Length: 226
View 1 (tube, helix red, strand yellow):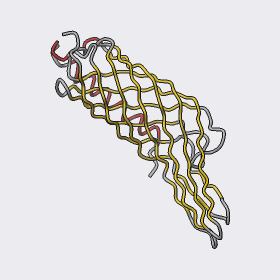
View 2: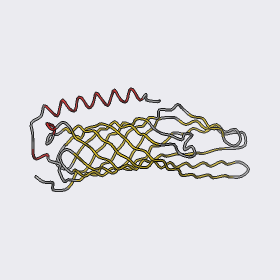
View 3: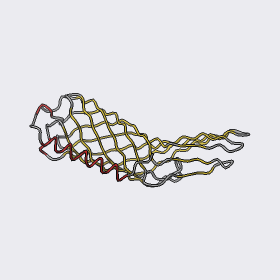
View 4: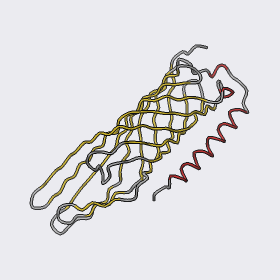
């Protein structure tokens, strides 16, 4: 099932408003300081491409259908420069679901993954949420999208094709961190991928721009400043 970008945007905006109202209603707790601390985060979620479903035709009239949405996962590192700003480095994998129909004489197996490698900043707001358990933020990141595709066609002969493509791009988004304790955070983020085209299609498409919704759990470490 393809989740429309507008539905993801409405969901993310609703969540962010609820998080901000919750955070501003809480009293300041300086023991929740994050300044100069570090974060390792595991991320899981889903992505949605703005283009429609694509279909390729291969050797022996093999049709390959690729959906324009799917699951994603990844890891991220963060370092809080202050209560209001954090540096981030993230590596992810957007798995494209590929369905293959075999021809009379050919059986095709195909996999495709797009992996964004991003360097970014989080700006937390408003200031009344600093030192509280809910921290809304806006984020921006730039980096590279690495696309990998492997195709194996078995007939009278076996043909294996593996390709890797790279494209520049970035992300913009909003989200919130939930401070559950000194060493545990939960997070939710709605971001939009913006990228240039791959030179050749990966998983049936040259461009995977579109929204993503991500949930994360992280381990926070370091003494901080308080």
